[in-house]
Image (cartoon, rainbow, N blue to C red):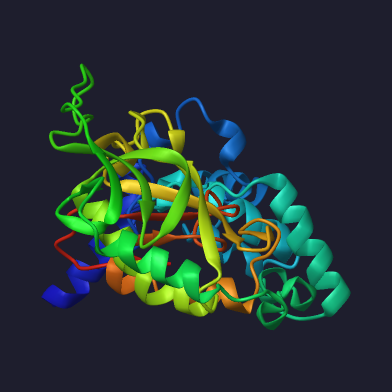
Length: 313
């Protein structure tokens, strides 16, 4: 008898009390994440929200909107990254990138964005670049072994120690700052203000991975960003970026001894992908093309403290 009464209570409760009991296991979206940015919500999500309010259908994950025949899957894949309320990281993908992905998909009939990341015509002929002379190799070896101009206790990291960087913004600043000009015998396009953790990691990655991958013909790293006090991805209200702590550096291109510059934006070929993937063991975070929409034209590497281990995408 009691089970029957319990069932009646459940069935009659909406009629008696005038409200529907939400039994969905999915958490409701945080209203604060929606304030001021209505343009970031997909039309499909808006329609779903209206139907949920009217009690027509249960709530669902906005990312599943791609399964709806009335919604263009390519558009959803691109726009779903803009639904900030369901992602712990901002993943806004630029519109021009969305257009490129759609065009390349249509041309190749291949799923995913692999074709975007593997332009075979961008491969460089390393064999066609003259190797260093014996004199040049000996000179570089002496420079790498010398502590003259070295920082962080590593001969191959050249630069100078600078005064600690302080900031009125909480979270920004570099207590033990250095201004580095080259690592592993490879010059930087601009002096980079960082701390020694990122300087050492960058030096090891270039020495162990990047330089061997280019057959010793890498002469410069084009630095897109180093220390700057700002939020992550310049998103208002986000946490302070590792750039604001001197623990991050962005690399936009690799320049070879013959002057060839392989940019991440235009030449993300098999060679650069291999160099990028091999960066994971050296840094705590590695982000690049295809990671989150913010790093399509550069490699972001940092040495942020992570209890969960390295974050590589």
